[in-house]
Length: 170
Image 1: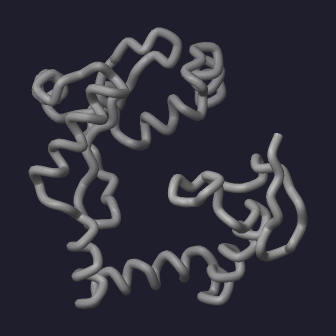
Image 2: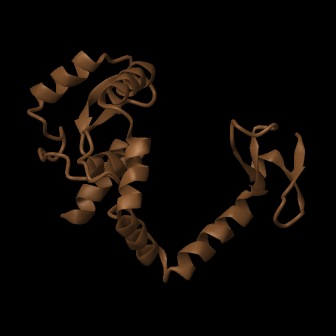
């Protein structure tokens, strides 16, 4: 396995200790994961902790400069639809029309909790429902809100874990 020297701690480490980055010659960033984690923690602490850092970022997003920056990164509606079409096709073998049909069939509600998606993304827009699929077969099961999708991910789609959780709650 190839090795690389971290530009921050100047230690020779295996490439697995560096985050991947397509733009770099060797395909990895120049600072190791440990140094990047430490730098991120220090940056957050300088703002007064993670919550304060996130609050400062949201506050910046509401300034004129932040709005201009966000607009640059948002892209056009046409591009967003193109990206969504590509992701649905690549990940789930679904067309946008099939996704919309599922959404309409579920009345725009989560297949588990029956509630609409409430998670707001960094652009102050409500996210779409997530496509839920069997990780072994790839079969699409339905559309879920973020909370239910995270719940299933945490349980690793294991029925025994979910039953155990139900017993615990009762």
